[in-house]
Amino acid sequence: MFSNNPNVNILTSLIRASKIRHIVVCPGSRNAPIVHNLHALSQQHDISLHSVTDERSAAFVALGIASHTHTPTAICVTSGSALLCTLPAVAEAHYRNCPLLVISADRPEEWIDKLDGQTIWQENALRPYAKRFNFADTTESCNKNEQLMQEAFSLLLLQRPVHINIQLKEPLFNFTTKELPEVTIHAEHSIPSVSTQSLPTEVIETLRNAHAPLLVMGSSDAFCPQYFYEIEKRMACLAEIIANAPHSTLADQMERALLHADTFHFVPDVVVHLGGALIHKRIKQFLRSIPHLKVIRIDANSHDADTFCHLSYSVRMSTEDGLKALAELPFHSNAHARLLESLNQVCAPQTSPNSIEETCIAELGKILSSQPDMLSALHLGNSMSVRWASRHIIGGLFPVYCNRGTNGIEGSVSAAVGTALSENGNVLLIIGDLSFFYDVNALWNNELGGNLRILLLNNNGGKIFHHLEGLNHSPALSNYIAAHHTATAHGICNSFNCYHKAITETTEINEALNWLLATDFNRPAVLEILATNDLFSK
Ligand SMILES: Cc1ncc(C[n+]2csc(CCOP(=O)(O)OP(=O)(O)O)c2C)c(N)n1
Image (cartoon, rainbow, N blue to C red; front, side, top):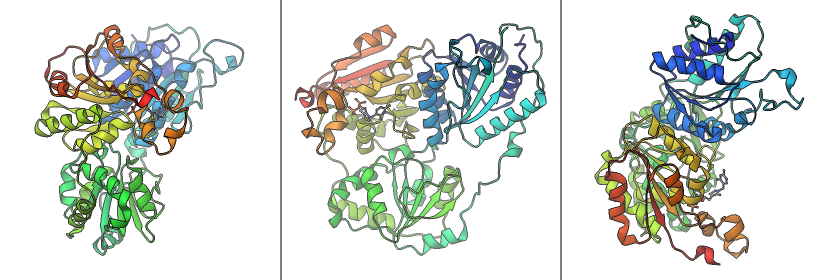
């Protein structure tokens, strides 16, 4: 039996007909009719419900599932501040082109600002990051509401976050409807046909005539490492680890080479730009500074990011189609070999690690290169984790994710949890301590099994701030900017029923990594590197 609310039932039918296969649900009474229906669906169809209490975390769990499964994923929250808690993940989804559907239950509008509990302005709460669809609880034509919801589902197929807000009046808990309304998703028909599968002739000719063509690629959830080998025969290639590119450590080498920009001789004249945000700031600044540079941006979405301030062409194409088209360009060039030569003249491919955290990632990089099957996915926390991984781990072995849409530290554990819930193989998260403790609620999850492994680099605060030139002169650095603390994960792991091991010496790294990666666990495991350093003693 289903809810007696017509809007809730139309939504449920559309979900049943859609590609959504995972729904994260959060506790509450106003959204209980929706959760009731979703639970009924999950009993009869291939749809999994995941219960997560903290809505901020829950939205990132859904994002982790959506980015790994490449399918729209929903989160359902109750009314009031519960909805506001999803905003960070929605912003991340917006900048990652991730199809996240936020369903919120709302109270009747006439009770807003009358001091009724959990009754706030919800309709536009996720704007401008999600397109919103609001449904009043009226007996108004259900056809119109179905049409509106169809539109919401079509936007999801365009890889956009969407917000469906449903006002629900009491009584809430009547569940006597036997059948859901019949709906078919005709969303495909309403998608504007903007995407192309081949590069325009003008773009191909621009690349053919370029002296030093260069592909630059930042964060992307598309996993197609195979194309990069062909692209490197046609143009130089600087694609980051979070672009899932095989020779991703070159981006780190380039970043270091640019410290000596006067001796670095590879200057591109045409750049093809794919993917989202770049980790390496100096590469971005270098490209911005080249006069007369031409930039060809390939992006399925309509907002053309002019990252290097030289945007010359925009090509509306998915990342995967774009990479494929570049791999099939009808000419070869030696630009990549020239890039490698210039890089190697200025600095070596890798530097020796200079801390226990970096040594640990370097050792991990060696293990994963020889045994990539150990992992099904790698998640990287922001800050030093993603930077050290860029230097020591190569991309393209397994999907690599990082919340680089907004670079927030608030949802990295949750996103990794999402991937672990939608995947049988092992998912490894490498993360710093502030990011870990911030989002530790993600481990408050009964459903999680032993395929989530966490490498926690605990250096008692935000180490990145100690690398920022000039900031070390500020007496506020340690306590107020880098947020020095002495917390360890031992007790938290105990509370959340996770395995935990801590080490303090580099000599213990290999055995500990073996424990983390090769043990058969039935709950998440955390290897904590306790980095004793004097950074915070000042
Ligand atoms: C939500 C949010 N708040 C604040 C920041 C600013 N910030 C960037 S890096 C960082 C420190 C992260 O520390 P940690 O996770 O311990 O990593 P480490 O710097 O030690 O590698 C902070 C606070 C952010 N990115 N996101």
